[in-house]
Length: 477
Image 1 (cartoon, rainbow, N blue to C red):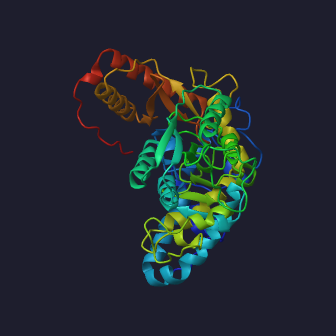
Image 2: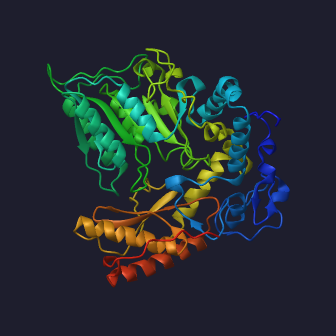
Image 3: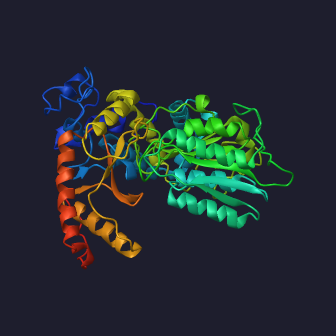
């Protein structure tokens, strides 16, 4: 019988020391690990820190990647080998004795995971729960809120499309509830976005005089008897496309003034920014962990302010533990969910500590992407860039939506055939590509990407995107 797994055990018990890249044994975080490695870019400040592995191509040995150039960490993340091995190890042990695992081992390990994840948000385990992804978390939250006729839900033109659809569904379900959309065109200043939000809140809600949330859920009042009022402001932490920082902390503080609930879609926050919910005081905040935190697909954390625990009545879908006022137990994972990705989160967190910790990783990503000298989406205050940039492409946007989609698929295929990928999107009638800066990336990789897009742009100018192409084959190393 295999030895039982402890989520608090040393990482080597999970296979960290057996992680392999190019048939080389890897010992995460040791000084031997840094000796004799490939040369890295000396001109990126912080790429080398004594006692930790050098950032750059040296880091690739910790991931199961070979020739593929991964510059799109923001979509699906990228899982280190040690975390993958930990997951496989756990799956093997779980499946040898499923019932004992499910009935005796999972719950205490869930508690341990909550205890390790909560500090990433500046809170304690009683106020967080791990969920499948931010979409699942946001759906759980908004479907639990009892909206009433006259309620308004505020969102933005940059709100992630599936979340927009969720809010539309809520408004269809609850009579008399509607959406107010704030138009966002980057590279606007953060102050402009805050002012636009303030104008909408001021239009519908009476000021409360509050600067922070109290000990109960806020109850907004309309400016007149029986009038509409903003019940919920749904804002981005870091927008998906374009991938830019949103002034979520300022907007969160602002909505206290008007008694509205705040929900922060922080799908890209953890791993790109240091988050402190005690300081920002949102009502709800959700963030994926598989995107930037190196956990296995898929994991997200949902934070619910203590004053709002009573608003969350059930998980989505409802599980065995439905109770009207007990949280976070109602929204814990259901027994039939594969919890191996969830329970190996501590391995990913240890790996991040072993390579230098949150501040070093985040700072390295920011410095790297800001060194790429191209036309990027940024304002004069430098407020928009985290660890990913949005580079403008020298390609005209078709006026026809069908041709635009055809062009996008064509460009994606060309990049994937070159064994490289970054997503592209249209904002303000311009093509942009979102490029992630990660610990394994060097400036030379941006040159490779630039060359690939030069070929893409030339092919589009020749009209090749208008012709039918054979299906793309998957490249296997």
